[in-house]
Length: 279
Image 1 (cartoon, rainbow, N blue to C red):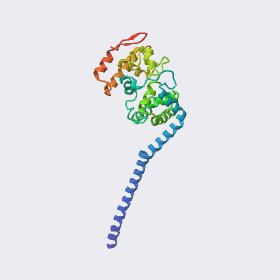
Image 2: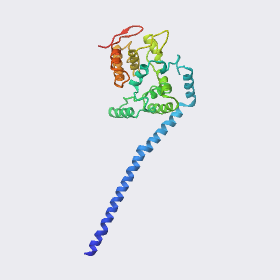
Image 3: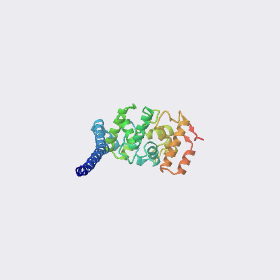
Image 4: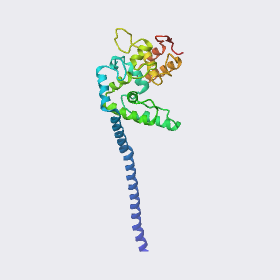
């Protein structure tokens, strides 16, 4: 009887020790997995993106872009660069608001938009969401083709990280606004303003009036699809898209509700014809 009790007394502590060892082992495995997923993989991913971006961009092209910016020229196209500091504030705000409202907070890649796009693509079984930040759009416009592939998206992200490393947010926005395609062979916000409205984006221009908020919102809306939202070809779609831009700007606090309402009521006069506001 005494032997049985002694055996039981020694067995219980051993069992507890085994359980504690199992718990400690499980905790170590969890911490290791957490370390890999949260620390190591992101670092490896970011390092891969950075090195790929450096390889794809190359020093010569960066120097060429820097030279064009310093000389006030548009990289890749003819024309004079109009910087965001030379424009009314509502012009860059319209584009940032509708295309990339976290532009000033991310480092070339917006994880929130990217995650949402990946989830939507997986759910739909096809590539439907873009999730391209303004910096990624600059990368695509200046360095890549327009093919919608996952390989190109990776390259966009890689180049975007390099652009964010080399240029300020203001410089990236200048590159963006002066290189976007607006349909009808027009590249850049200044060329589009002159082509569609016979106006300029430059403040205090002695020869031409500057585009107003309503016109800026219409141009910003065209970026999603220069042909689909071309007001000269698809008036109704262009006006609806303009409303989306203005509503988004007001929602983000970039303009007041009164400014939004006034812009919505304005008729947009083009060189060739006038487009009345949507009823």
